[in-house]
Image 1: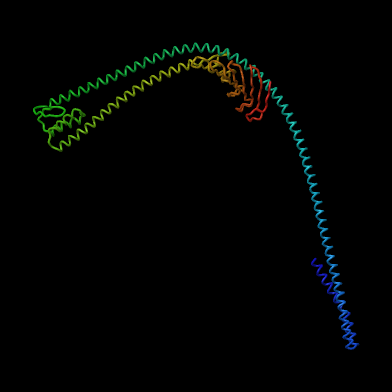
Image 2: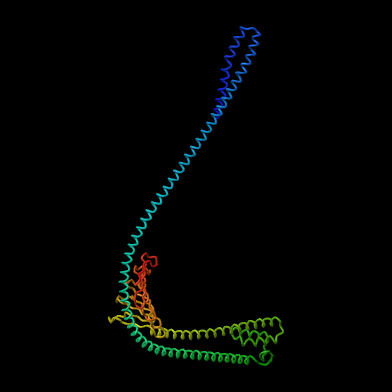
Amino acid sequence: MKSFKVSLILFVSVFFVFSFYPTISFSQNKISSVSNVELARALSDKESDQQKIFKKQKAQADKIVKQAEKFRNQEAKQAELQVKKQKAQADKEARHAAKLREQAIKQAEKEANQRQRKAELQVKKQEAQAAKEAKQAKLHVKRKQAQAVKEARAEELQAKKQKAQLEKEANQRQREAELQAKREKAKADKEVRAEELQVRNQEAQAKKEAKQAEKLRNQEAKQAAREEAIQVEGSSDYIIIKTEKIPQEIFEDANYLVSIGKYEDALPIYNYAYDITDKKVLKKEIYDKKKEITKILSQQEAQAKKEAKQAEKLYNQEAKQAELQAKQQKVQLEKEAKQAEKDANGDGKIDTFVTYNGKGKTSKSETDTNNDGKTDEWIYYKDGKVTKAEKDTNRNGKSDTFLTYDDKGTTTKSEIDTKNDGKIDEWVYYKKGKIVKAEKDTNGDGKPDTWLAY
């Protein structure tokens, strides 16, 4: 629009220049050939003509401006029309893009449906394969279960026979063991009482000897006092001594008795010397000596009590040890009485070990069924009835088949480790001795994923 205005202004300017140029040239030529009056008249006419020309030119310019305005409006309309066309084109392209997008979505859905149908077909094929494998597994399990039921019944019958025989033998052995245990206990009790009596006699003898020794010491002290006693009679809180010795000599005699260990004999002599002396230094020495002797006598008394307690403790320990030994012997005898061995197949080798409880009833039996020297069957009892059993069918020394029984001794459940990895992967359930269902773990996650019903 700006370029259009500039073009219009240039056009109008050129138009005015070319319009006035002939008029000016004509006026100059005419003036040169007429008079002044005519010149004035001519000029007046000229001015009038120029005004007319100017008006004509102005009208022409207005016309041009209007034409330019009209042209501008036309261009604006054309531009608006162009914009509308572009918008219509854009809308058309947008609709086309939406249509393409819808077509792409439909195509994607179609492809997804195709993939889904393929996947469903694949799943059906896999299910058919799994059903086939399950059918085969069911047939295998059924055969194995039939074999297991057959073996379980045979083993149950054999176990009942063994149980009856072993219970009979165990009862006989238990009665003999109880009788022997009673005899051993009576013998042990007799020995314990004899040992107790001997210890008491030894204590009485020790006390008697201690009293005799004390009596002898007193007699010796009295004899020494009589030998030393002469004319002078002194008073004491403990004894009366007749002597002519001075307090210092009496103090030294008491010290001599202390040096040879006669503390009880020295104590009354110290008391006498303390009573008859007036010297404070000697009194202080006598007091210290008396204090020292009293302490020594207290220590001796404490030591004697300690030795007496130790002797009593030693006696109690020996008595307890004897009693414990008697109990151990009794337990060992009872244990021996609670176990029995048997040769079930008659080949001359022990292959069955039966354990009994305190009431003489079977609690466990262990059997070597294949005579390889290793136990491969364990049967557990409660109140004389079979409750569970374990078997080692692959001879690796570990249980891989576990059976559970009801109160009547009938199998209710069997659990089998078919892969020998220590994990149960097959379960069979029984009702009245017949299989009712089976479960199997084929992927090793510890959970059943195959179920069979009968």
